Length: 137
Image (tube, rainbow, N blue to C red; front, side):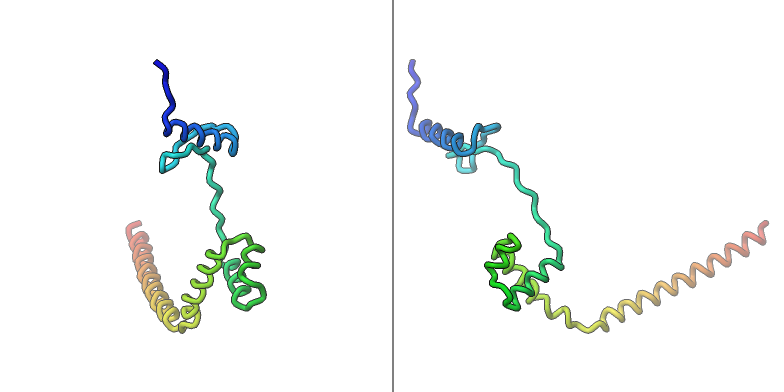
């Protein structure tokens, strides 16, 4: 009995040939999510990480108007969406830069007082142990 290709089989073959011509031979072909096209599995690139200092420099340059946003994105190879997110983060968190340092100094003072009390207790405990050890020996 002769096997005839159906329309769905022909679409799959055409898609395979298209991918084969475009990407070269398929090492491990797999189906896409929609199941219509075979594709070659290509490893993902590593995710780039930017330092906070770099982000701040780029955003400040964008906000001062030294360069347009598009020029900065091309220069640093970042997307415009990414630069916009960084700008919004800076603007949203700018108020925290001007908060008074009293909160931080009060917390620091309380922590220092607790640590001094702990050092005092440990010193007393050490003195007691020294006296006990000399008394027992």
